[in-house]
Image 1 (cartoon, rainbow, N blue to C red):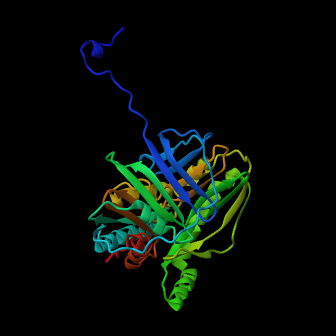
Image 2: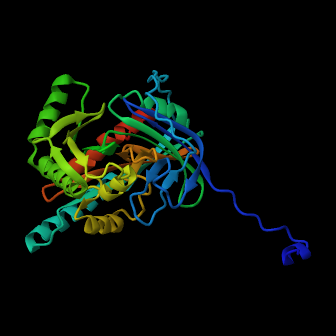
Length: 372
């Protein structure tokens, strides 16, 4: 029997083909390439999955379900061609003065919470840079330049923006949210940062200053406690290094703590554990719900995949998920860069804004431009 539409001569209704996308993930120990795979709205954690989960619970994830997943040894990190002169307009969103005003307002809220007995202790406030180029951005070249730093994991994922337009998310993150192999789990939370310098003495002074910073160690301790408290119910054994260690990318020093555990159930999927940990106080705050609400009110624009988690799961439970940091959302000739700073009661607005500038450097260097 023909449908009413067919009887009237209208074209039959067609089911929209599922959105397909691609994914690249490369660290010093492994590499993954997925050229074409369907995007899934409700992921099945018993099958291979790659991609990213969003910062906000109400924003879409970008998870793909490839037919098969091959985790290979890392490819050689070839030297990318030198940065060419790039004519670009850079717009800060918000500008430096407005961001410092926002920081001051959030710090005042934290200080008032402490005085009144409220439990708000930390908020990670981000800002954005809009890089507007004269020609479409060469994403392959950007990714090659980011991969020059051996201390980061680079990633690239096809996505659709909130307006539905095709988007590429690329980045170079130093932070391991959760790595699971069999019954072993590992996390390396990072919190507390200082810009690096090409001058050795200045660089070492920055590193030692970070290690000695009471503000940064307080910020870092909140993140470590969150990871330990979250993983504890899943683990029969759980250990953390007694003091923070220095870990650095080419542009930023971080305080890090190595956390290792043994799972009670080795079949627990890595994505389940990553979702339990996400978002950590390194990208959100303490407590999570209050910090998230304050971030939404202050930043005004959803973060999307920034400050989420990016990685893979092989369907047996094993997988690796990194915090989605040092990233850019590329659409044609425009890129939106994201960077944040962790705020506690002793934070200084100018210092926090300078911290975000240091975190922007890796991506801006890849573009061959300067924030100024």
